[in-house]
Length: 174
Image 1: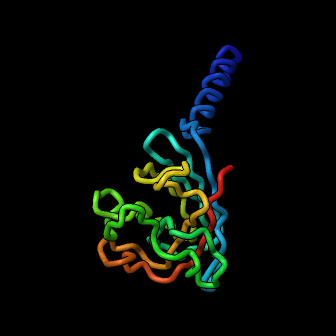
Image 2: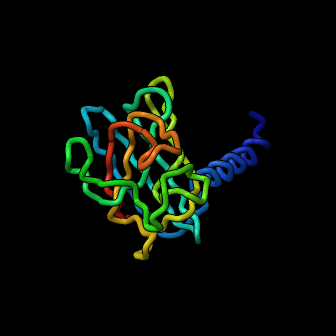
Image 3: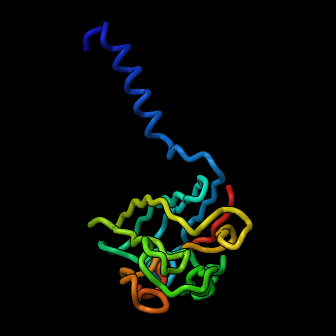
């Protein structure tokens, strides 16, 4: 590389990497470490960052079957049952029916499906509304995040016909 261009290139590269390093959201944060459930080998981490009325949800998950998987915030922060039934139902503070994550008629805990690649890995990032990291009625700290074996169809009641619970993690502030 030309010696006169090298410092400019290095500076540009560091600025680019610094811009990609964070989400740009600097509010409260929480995280859940996933535990395999229902005989699965799923592992990973889900993180949450608050920014005003929006919540950034990011996940890195391994051990999934390829394809789509239901992904929801559940009512209880208890992942102790072998099938994660101890996490109870979808988090639903407004008492609405199950629905599409982008619609107004949905559980607050209804999230977009995770999509695993051919190797069973999923990287997820979405900004959602209706959830928060505060202590109010939409607060999710102390609740759980659950991954299901099958895709959420976004319409079947009460949980989107997304099958057994294959991973569960309790959401805690960091």
